[in-house]
Length: 371
Image (cartoon, rainbow, N blue to C red; front, side, top):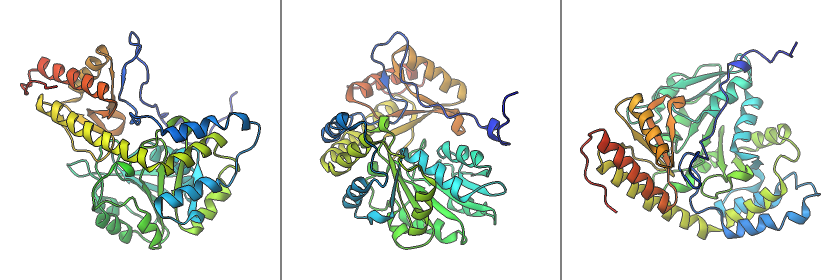
């Protein structure tokens, strides 16, 4: 007989990423995974290639050079940074270190799927708080669901898949309302895409003291998704715990080198932000003008909302028939929505044409699509 996993493990629905290929299309528009349309920095690519002759050697287990580069780029204390194999690993380690059977892990209803997965894996109970009608995290709803068993509160800011965010004042209100012993984890994977003065990724809350951790990733604006690289910034006590529970060589040497070059290449970050803002706004205007609802977003994707889940499913099928990959959000509790990443210019133009055609077929009566 096969060994029996711990209770709850078989209740987990495995995380499935966005589709990357489409039968019949050599080059589909890949808009399902929130990837950077410009690709990685040339400096990061060269740093990665230079590691080819060093593959027999173990990486620096402390990631000292990468932590120093991150600290320099963001004005942080390198000693309070921990690097991981993607922010996913760090999220899972935080839950494993601070929660277990009998504990609760709180998150916003339409938040990242890895939060409840990590909680269930550790034997803790995931608790979802409802969001506002604008699909925004509700501070009052989150605080109302905090109990003596709540060990961690996860907040994706901006949130995937809604693209909404809480400003600095709301973050502070959430933090101030949490009891001692509850760790607030601000998942700022899309922070570099936010261009709003009221926004804070969360590092200032970490520096102000208290039980706050900020997680970040190299998968989005730095376009290093294939290398699985992330980092967190937190109190010294949390950093000490994380360094005890993580693997001794949890980040590969090529990833360390590419990450160091990427985070210091601020010109590439600026170009990526400019591209994203231009084509996100253009796509919203075009598809909205065609008669579909496109929700505001502060990240590198948008949500297109339909009248019902059936229409959303029809839209997915229509997009696939015309070589466009998107992602339906049923698993996030939004079955009437499709998430569309901001891709290259040709991808956004193709997607806009396809959505406009679908709107016409549905008789939505929007304006004619423009070039």
